[in-house]
Length: 208
Image (cartoon, one colour):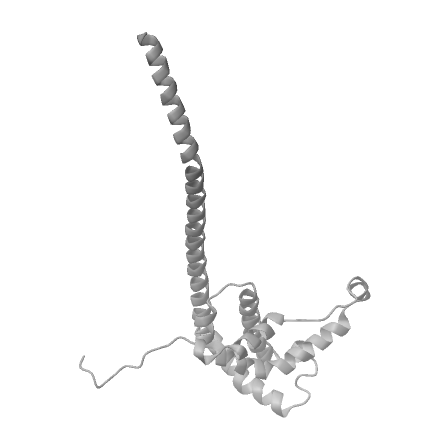
């Protein structure tokens, strides 16, 4: 008799446990899904922070290079000598980059290739645009206004020199030499002053 009672009780316990597990299973599955979603969100946030840190590091690297004394000299050369020649001598841009004398060519290529590289990386979705354009928006546009006639002429020359094979394979071929520089200049032009970093002024009326 005792054995039958034990079997009966065990059967009742099994049924109760089965009912409990059946009720809990959907909640457990839901909890597992929620945990997975939270894990994905946290992972993405962590990865985003890592990307933001990498972008900031790369941006600071470019800003440091922009401030290098040798590069500043080349920028000054573009904004004085090259700017004067572009505005005063109609033949200055006629042969493109290769028609420039050694000093002008070195300065022009150093500045234009630097901004072309930055523009390509910006286009790829990297670098901290807000920091970069807060510091460089005006210099970028200043250099673009000086160098764009030379760049346009260089593109025309390269387009004419494109061989028949290129034309045949790419009927809609368009020469976009240093397109990154142009992209960067347009991004700088569109950058609103409202998006620039808000830097506080020091209040000299307050005690130190």
